[in-house]
Length: 302
Image (cartoon, rainbow, N blue to C red; front, side, top):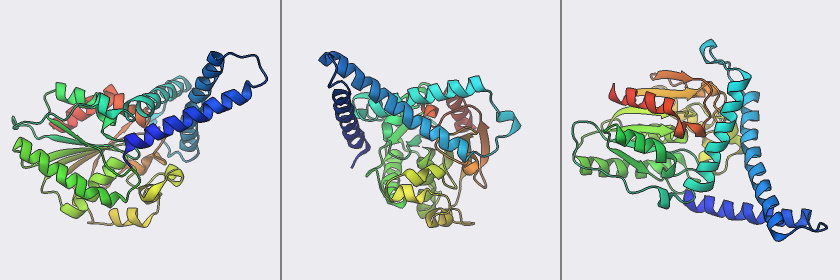
C-alpha cells in the first residue's frame, strides 16, 4: 500500500469514528447537525494533538542527556510542541494524503556543475514530506529529485532496489556520475542499506536528518517489518552497524537533542559521520525548519 492511500484511509476512518462519537455524545442533547459536526471536528483535532503528546511523553521517558549547548527552557519546549503539532497536521492531514495535488514532478536536466540531490523520506511518509525543503533547495540552484518508497510496511532492504533505480534515472537525466543523498528519519537507514548493498560509487555525500541509526524506542509501537527493524537491538540494526558493513561517503548526521520520534536522541550519532546537534526542534518540524535549510545548504555545498 502506498503512503498516500494509507493516510487517506486513516483520515476517512478517523472522521467516521469521531462523527459517530459526536452523535453518541449529543444523542440526548438538542444539538443541530452543524453542532454535532463541529464537536466531531474538535474531537479529531484533540485526537491528533494526543498523538503528538504521546511521542513527547516517550521522548522524555527515554531521553538522552542533552549537551549543555542544547538545553532549552519551558517556553522553548512549549513552542516546539506547538510547531510539531502544526507540522503533524500539515503533513498527515493535508500534504501526504494528497501528495499528487501538492508535488509536481521532479525537474531534472543536464548538470550545470553541481551534483543532483535525492531526498529520501522516512517511515509512513512519501515524497510530500519534502514539499517545502525541495522548493528551498531548488531556489538555491540545486537539482532535486524525490522518491516515494512503497509499500509502506516493508523490509528496509526491500527499498534498496527502488533507490538504486531512482539514482540511475537521476544520473541518466542529468549526466552526473554521482548524487548526494539526504535522508530523513528511516530515509537515512534506507540510504545506508543502499550503500551496504550497492556500495558508494554513485554517492558523493550522505546527509541524514533525525535518523535512528541505532534505533528508536518508539519503534516498538510501529507496524510492519521496517518498524521492527528500527527497534533498538534488532538483528537488522546490528548487521547494519557492524564494523565495515557500510561503506560511507562523506557523511553528516544532523539531529535534534529533543527529537520526539527518535529516542534516545543520541541514537542519531553515527560513527564516521560529522555530527551536528540541534536544540528545540521536533522530528516532523524538520520539514519546515529554516535551520535545517541553512545547514543543508551549507553541508551540500561544502
